Amino acid sequence: MKPTEELMHEHEIILHMLSGVERLAQSIVATHNVDTAKVKDVIDFSRHFTDGCHHSKEEKHLFVRLEERGMPKEQGPIAVMLNEHRMGRELIRQIETALQEYEIGKREASGVVGQSMLRYVELLKGHIAKENNILFPMGDRLLSADDQQFLEKSFKIVEEQEIGEGVHEKYHRMAHEIAECILPNKS
Image 1 (spheres, one colour):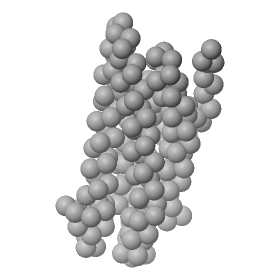
Image 2 (tube, rainbow, N blue to C red):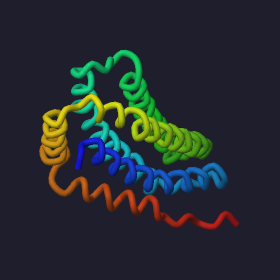
Image 3 (tube, rainbow, N blue to C red):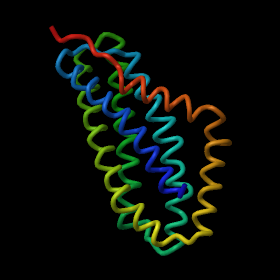
């Protein structure tokens, strides 16, 4: 499997998780009730799988190799992707801060939790579409067979050393749990 195909597979997992996040956020906006445990799972997944694993592979390895092959980092697709990674991190910080306020009794913070989650979903859906349809095809044209092999090994190192054994699978399960969460009736 090419490295970009591995990343696209991870995108499928992230998109599956986002379907549950979107429903959860809509429920929060509609009811002003926050299931804090579920939102904490979203934060955990976003920080450790989406950012810590997936974005790490892109930022530390794929984007670096693409830049070495002539794709500029300061403009164009890589610059857009890096900016969107930063925006995603900021939205997760906003969600976490608002959740903490909600937990100490500031119920009005539920709106910030829900709206920030919806913005996060929208950001990531657009981001994934750009990577899958623009950046990855461009990258595959630039990268040699040796580059592809190098990235495969680099991604494996991220999985084994930076993320840890079994952690990837944990987040696959969590993505399914978030996606399949049953929301309470709004009645």
